[in-house]
Length: 425
Image 1 (cartoon, rainbow, N blue to C red):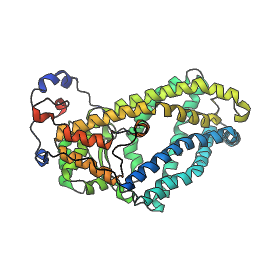
Image 2: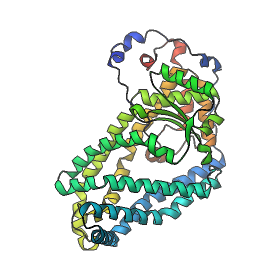
Image 3: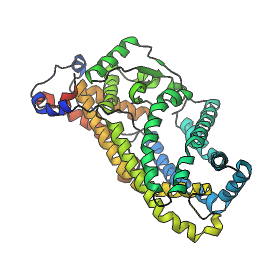
Image 4: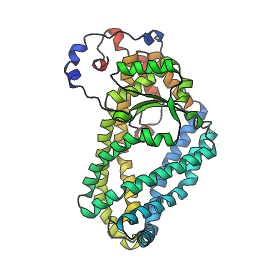
């Protein structure tokens, strides 16, 4: 998702034209690039089976995400949970907290078989998981507890806004989403991620120094590099830059360290640093906040009609009633599904920009393309998904597009200026 921090440099933008006329020295890793194109590998039958079943499960999950809150809502079960919470909690805050706890436990129990199949059974069946059942259930219970704590701490806010401003609640709640997203970006790397995996210093100190040197060239100061023991859970590969301010960090899964060669790994890290330097986190926060605001407005325009039409069955007559939570979730899921392609289109553009950034700072085209080949093979990827799947599910350009871009993007060989040259030290 969002793994970057904005570093705006107005002076750099002002001097872009002047700096573009000079060419920075070629990094030593560029000598490892043989200049040979890397063909896009055809996916294995296993990968295509994983892809097709994944699409089917995604369609099921979309329907399931509407069905579960819909059943809880239209059977009147939500109103009964509200009545119980009001009888026990009495005061408004405790009513909301108790309702949310019971609602979350019910949804967790209903959803557990689906999650068990998709995240545990299926991943083991395709050889993608190393996770024990004990680790899987522990992680899921931990995630449930975290969601309960966050819900109890923050759910009262939108319901207070609904009570105080029934006509403008969507606007104020959408605006409040911005500081909430920023807060989650701050605390997730430090407090939440370590609940699920062990984060420690990199074991390969020589590689760590090369990553830090690359970060310095990218203008990222005060970086810390962490190696996470992700092989206990999965065989998939990943790396990212997370956090804001003092919590920013470079994180590598131990699986990707073991699988990629040094030039390939440095390209991946250059890509992640590109997100940071190009301010993609702030741009995505702005985009996501806008989409949330539009979605909340759509809910505001239609929820009243739903309540008026089925008031007796629902058991409440106002969105300010906490029993409306399944209705809010149902409508939010439906409307956000509609705007999802917009957010994914921006995400794919940001990922492409980061690929360009990394190629320009490392100039290791062949290792970059080989890294994507390994990602395709180890993550059972389909390099050419269907157009609708790309539209609604792809947060990154297709692997075929990324490999081909790595093969062809070499402006420095023709003495052409680099797009991000002004950002490099």
